[in-house]
Each structure stands twice: as structure tokens, then as C-alpha cells.
Amino acid sequence: MSTRASPSGQYGSPKAQRLVSYFRDELEERSGDLYVKGKFIANDVDLSPKEIGALMVQLQESVDDLEIEKWSYTSATTWRVAKTA
Picture (cartoon, helix red, strand yellow):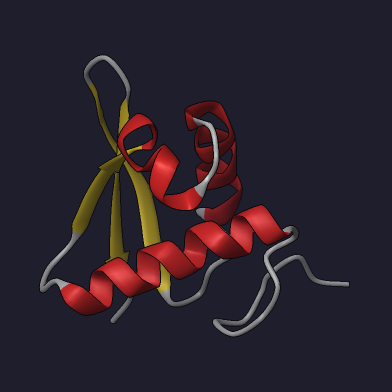
């Protein structure tokens, strides 16, 4: 069974699905890429920054319609999230 999920598929857990939905919603409201730190979105997605960091690593290769990458580290990891072309 493949671990790769389709854009409308499951991402392993309700927490991961909640995070992916959050990114999709934010990207719909904005033009361009989204830069986030787990500690700043934790309340929005009802997850701890540690949970967000672990999920981001998992989601990097499993969400076809989003490009997720570590962008920088200054007091916490900054992630860049963008729609794939």
C-alpha cells in the first residue's frame, strides 16, 4: 500500500489532515507562498509546536498539491508552504 496521498486523501491522522486543511485555506486567502513557524500557528490548528514540526516532516513527501520545505532556523524552524504548479 502506498503512503503517498492524493490531494483529497488521508494523511495518516486527523492532526495531519487538520494541518493540511489549514495550509490550503491560508494559501487560498493569500497570493504567494506561506512562511510559518509552528509556535505561531499552534493555537490555530490546536496542536503543539512539537507536533507541528513532526507532522511537517511527514507531510513534505505525502501531499501532492503542496510544496513543504524547511526554510530557515531562527529560534524555531520556519517552513515554506506553497501550492505546487
